[in-house]
Image (cartoon, rainbow, N blue to C red; front, side, top):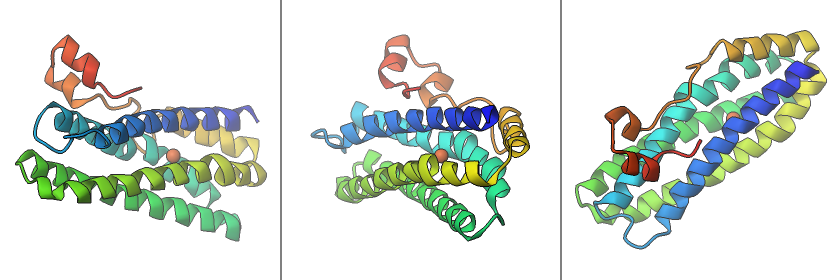
Length: 191
Ligand SMILES: [Fe+2]
């Protein structure tokens, strides 16, 4: 099933982008002084915004609107996995929205919120890694068992048309703001 492999390769590549940016984000949170207003906090905010937009507008929609509906109603295991992925996605969106609010507090100098944000980002990281493991493992396995080649062709076609979100991945706030080359190079999300 070539189409199934194409879908899996595309989603896995997007998962890698998320993991690289998440890893950079968590490295920052483990650095002394990350929570004080300044370049590190700005960089952290850039990464959180990128992850929020990348998930919401580019990646998660492909799964939510193209892959999951094809699996829904195909049996109890498929339904359980679909529900688990949908709930985790919604939860991650809430966590990132909360993280953005906490970042605003930190940027105003409210350093007392730093432990809350670090804890929240730790939960987000663990949740994302677990979700990706489910999607690349159980979800894809059961998809191969339950969906035929025509199903996968339709999913691949819908994803390539940009169904469920944008056809292009988001760019960072630095790029859209026209930041300097050195600044963009040092704070650009990691594609
Ligand atoms: Fe995913």
